[in-house]
Length: 154
Image (cartoon, rainbow, N blue to C red):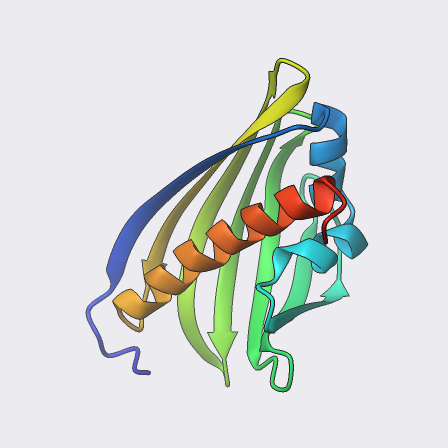
């Protein structure tokens, strides 16, 4: 991995509808203990060192393979509208090297008796397209895991 590569930009948009009330889906993001249970892919781990889910707050975390969570991240919450929207930015580093920076928007909307969640990630990777692919597959996996968690299968 080298930060000498030309920066790569991407916008990732994912949508899922869950058979759970809006308040329940939002609460899964607001609660870092719950979020850590479902958000990491099956062979990975997410460990929070600090969590402040509030506008102006930040999370500090480690993530990666269970036997080597070498990636370090920081999330800063710019706007939180309960049961409606979360706007945050995130940096991801490894061994002191900046890998990526992202702007993330979560939009929660009622969908009948369920909830529609739209995730938009606008990002720049300093280490090539593989990081963008990792963000997309990681977010897809997290949303699938959330669905399993909400239905009691996780």
